Length: 437
Image (cartoon, rainbow, N blue to C red; front, side, top):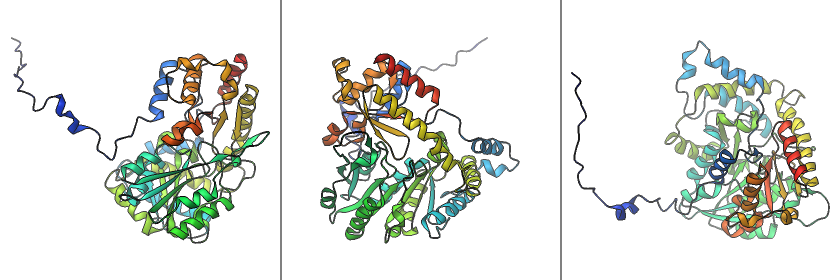
């Protein structure tokens, strides 16, 4: 005989009605935060299935030696490669990073106490900001900025202060070098409360590579006001046209006040691996280690081992043409130029990036062709990108998402596209715009 074992229990009266649920609202330090642009535009892409040139990830295969390393580890006889590894970074990886950056910055970088391996550059930023920003500390953020900077500062109870890059008025082609800081305005930002300035070079989304003179201005102000520079350099290998990527930590007096952040995802075109790092003097890195050990603790051992083996391959051929660090920007430059060409032919006005793999374009010359009133969004670049996604099947990202609320109008005339895509997909984008024209 089958017995019904279900038990029905009469519910007791709820402890609190819905009016009491405000107890579980966002904490004050998170209030004002909104869902990121990525959540909204990923959902939009899933619904309309456009050609997605918005999100910043490659759609082509990573180097074989990189993916083969992970496959080899999966079959490796060493069982410890699948267990926890050292919390602050797998030893083989931090040793490879130490060898690489010691040569690049011209000083010995201690692998055990001057490097922290993190869950992507995202966590490196988080651990840096949470580890160094205290109540009321002011943090200077250069606009447009990667959209996590501001909420992270607020989560640390810091005070974000914004200064925009401004596009110089000129005739003819626009370069990312034409996006500049107002030095007098920057000088006024620094004061006794300033704790940190966040620098991103090569810059997302403009593609600007800050030159030595520009970095010296920032360094002078950091030294004058005793300010920490957080240098987000995840696109460090992606520079074009002979432009030099200068690491600000190499400028006089800056090693002791700089934390530099890097990314395996950007370096080896494996963004899904989510391995990043921060390096700098131990007295700065130890703060990050404290945050890391009490949140993430450690990153996946097989992925770290794979990244380490990949760096070892590159270290053996660093500076040679076959190095992926040189071949990738060489492969991307024609794609950059092709995108600039088809955007220009469509009537937009692109900014030619010196680095990274994004391109901003002024879309407003096309405004007469659009019915943006069909989109209810507040900002014009959101209207434009959503209209294009739904009606043209081509998705970009609205750059106003990378500005503070008072300055969002500075991004409204632009759209951001990504060119680290298969040539066939760039060709499709060109055809979509050509057929529309």
